[in-house]
Length: 235
Image 1 (cartoon, rainbow, N blue to C red):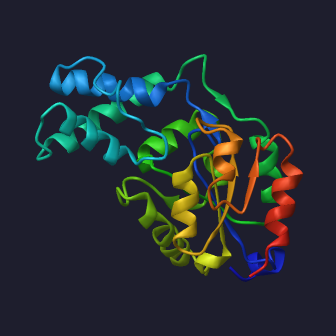
Image 2 (image 1 turned 90 degrees about the vertical axis):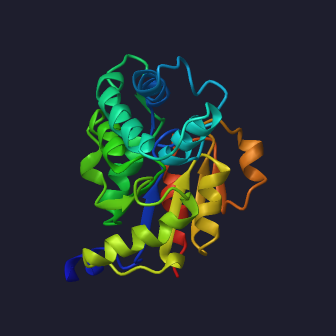
């Protein structure tokens, strides 16, 4: 990885959330969860009262099972399998779209030689299904997913470990998480990482400004601001 250190003297790792940050899946995730619950448990619209923003898929599924009085034993695996099956269908919908400025931001970061990863509550398979529908998978070397740990706050060290196995050595302070919810901010700050919050999900900019995010943008539609923040923070 010697060449990487030459082209990236800043030694930064940027980790992106997916839903609300990179993309809008057009409701594919929620529809897939509801279809899975109906297929496995024969209950319609099971997640209508459950807030999903910033949570891991396993957390959401456990909440659904608990709310409707089902045991976790054996049912989590059945739900995950059904969910991924339906997601491959639901992701192909006309409402899905990239968030503003995402493509340009990813291209600029790639040009700067900055390694990119994922830090998301999605199962790894689900994350790749969603990103694959936008042809974005190639940008992300690795990452930490809801399938690695159901507690989002535990994901940053997992991402660092995965990158270390690929020859990239980072401390938490050399990582920058980009996300759209207070949970994204928290999962970065508990480990001393930086966080860029974007108001492109369910939370308004005013709400994100009340978190410990290092900087908050309306969106990535002006990607230079994001890039300059990342380049300006050396460890």
